[in-house]
Length: 281
Ligand SMILES: [Zn+2]
Image 1 (tube, rainbow, N blue to C red):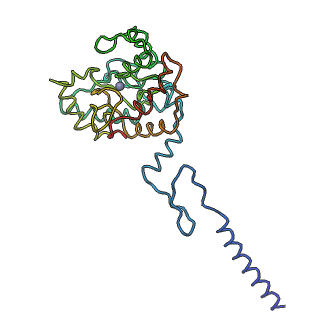
Image 2 (image 1 turned 135 degrees about the vertical axis):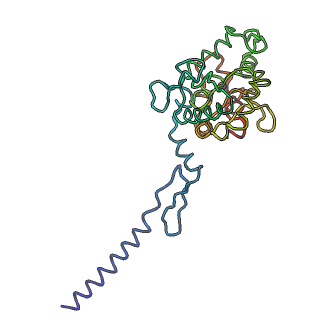
């Protein structure tokens, strides 16, 4: 009787060990589709906490609508209203983190005698479409007193507008991360108080997470928009939006405005959305 019991015990022991081993082998590390986790030799996963990994998570969560400007900042908790005291008009929005960073930067600038005023922040698709089509249809004159309607070739016309204005669906202002500050003329930033403002931003904005995507053409970027000394971007979010844009948006998504057919032949995604100052990548 005792021997039989012992034999049964041994069989049970061997069986359960084999079962556990089999389990260990048969349960694969959960397949990381978007994550690049390290799978150790003992088949346990060690999450890699690099920026790149969390970037990938964030990118997966960013909708195409958010990238293309189909947003409603006034009804979205991720956005906050910019205090009219810091802007040239009321009713403008930024993403919460970008706004908090802007407030901190503004405070620090004030200490140095620099006043930063928001002229433009989040713009949705319709807003950008008004800007674009006003120029496209000649209702608003372009830089250098050019009238877009004087340019017959659609691609040439688009290129002229693209020197300073984005096509609807391709603007960084859609993302809630970018602001235009103080003046929409580079000349303001070239002398006097404007130059002090630009020098302050150039030296300090990065400390608050802001970069200038449209620097002068040269080593940092090849083409794209002209230099815009007023346009600053909150990099911690905007750089992820840019990666998401690259991953998700195609030329099929850029449409529903005058001249949209020129977007693909002009390669606006590669040449304008993605070709920005390397500091903003
Ligand atoms: Zn801008």
